[in-house]
Length: 532
Ligand code: NAI
Image (tube, rainbow, N blue to C red; front, side, top):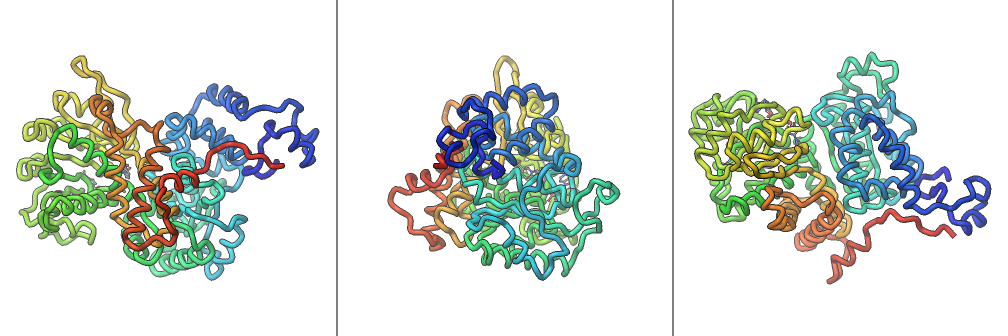
């Protein structure tokens, strides 16, 4: 009863009550899981805030994991915005106040030299996915230090709910090197180390020790980096991707979901990928991640590397990313164009004539009426993705995109927007939610026992996702499948990813002819199993 993975509460059967000595410890009437779902819903629906709903679900997860996953899976469209963005952001901000029971592992500065021993304290040994953050860039909310733990917990819940990775095989980790967030350091309820962030070599050494220890203690684990600040995210991806089974969802997962959206959007505009011109607003983790995968996709269509990069122009806070600039970091340099410096967005649009706008700048309102009208002049059906999160940061709203393009834009956003009525027509905006991609990629990597995670896997994941969009979806402007289908989406992606692992010689598991059957059988279903 005290172990959330085994606890059934009022659903322990008579036989279990007798055999396990539970008689008298639970009320006499034996309930079904359906009864329990209904009981949970009654209180849940009466809650007046999403944070209260988050606490209800988190407490349930700590009490009865099977019931928690039954509810999250059955009502994924409603629960995802609670257990993940946007509500999880609020939960992280108030983590010290809503903390009930510890979940996941904290590896801190104080564990230096002993991280492997600390990881061995985790009671389960067969860990297959670790999501790790250092809390420095939590969603669009900045440095939340140890409060960032809500993110790995939420993300791993999605691995289980969306792709059926068994909850006992998931491990959330927070690397605590302090925080530079003064209000947290001053907060008596803050649960993390009360020091400013360790940086430089000492920080790198700690992360390195964690990576070595995690790979040794949990040799079958995929390690996903999450919400690290830009200056560390790119470095660590480069440093570990060829030796550890790891990826960064902010960079690679975002890229894949955006590319899938582009593939679907091109079915609407009836244009070829190889003829597109991409203008990115924001040259950070999300933007350049999408750019790199786009280059790979364009090369697959016959363009040379140089030609593909000429199709991807970037604007950052200082203007167009061009070769003459002296302030460019490596991930931006790769996209620096041989062009005179330009600052003004409309002048850049005039010069480049993009067919696709990708917003990943975190700057609301960057896609102004004039910008949308300008791309609509060059394109019958412009593709406009306003990916910045949360909703308040989107480069433009869905309604603005449809209105300013006179209903011609094919639109997607990072945060959900309600359907829009415009001139008597109903438009359903797409949501480029990373949950379409990372759970399926993780499942495929685990099924194949892949030694590494490659960009090709994210490319194939994007194509697979786009192929699952139906003509009916497209007619409504919907360029992603409904979230309710997420488990079958993840399964299809997992099969494709496992095949890539096999073809690239990275698979350590022998894959049967019936790969789909094998992977489906691996998926966890939130049902009570008999304990006697
Ligand atoms: P980042 O901090 O790495 O990059 C931000 C970039 O925007 C920088 O290159 C900066 O120079 C640029 N920028 C700032 N002001 C600008 C302006 N006025 N015009 C053009 N560029 C400007 O941040 P990251 O991680 O790339 O995230 C960016 C946004 O993308 C965030 O709002 C995030 O929530 C969103 N995002 C969306 C995802 C999705 O939709 N699935 C997934 C990941 C991130």
